[in-house]
Length: 246
Image (tube, rainbow, N blue to C red; front, top):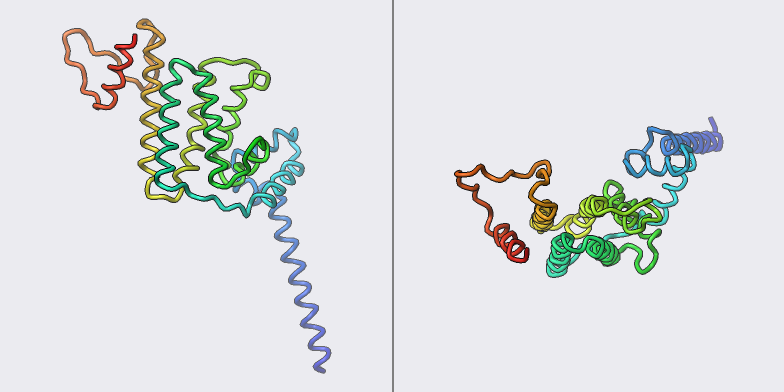
């Protein structure tokens, strides 16, 4: 076999292998069981519903998001900034008892500020920010959408305190990821936000009145003549403050 013929055969084999690899990659990305459903999880299902079940259109939209925002690099907030953001979130959660809508609006503003600070689109670019967040936080971005929808009765159909409360709790997951991912302070930050939310829920239950059944997962009042269960000092201080105000 002449050297020229050998070179031609090698080139043909390389071209064929490259074409096969390209087709396999393209098929894997477009198939229902491909990488997009695994990457986006619930966000993939939402995109399919948005396109009335058209998976091809949904996947095209998700690929465009990855192409636009996939290379975005999130910046972890400094410890001091993370502490400030956590304090702000804890404050708005406690404020929810007396001013639910104002607290939810503040959570929306704080989420936008935090997302922008770590590298996502800022300002009034809400749609772009949601698309960017959906690429990097597909399992939590819907909580942000729920919060914005709850603040806009025209989108949600109605507005209720319970809807605002549930939306606020759902949005907290995204907030925690934005401020704590990949840092040594992640656990402390999440614990702080979690305990603040727990105090807010308990205070909200008390505000419903003495005849309202306690929410699931909360302790009931001790029977007459029995000693009350001990409570953490921080919670006792907060409850005492609420009792004095009432």
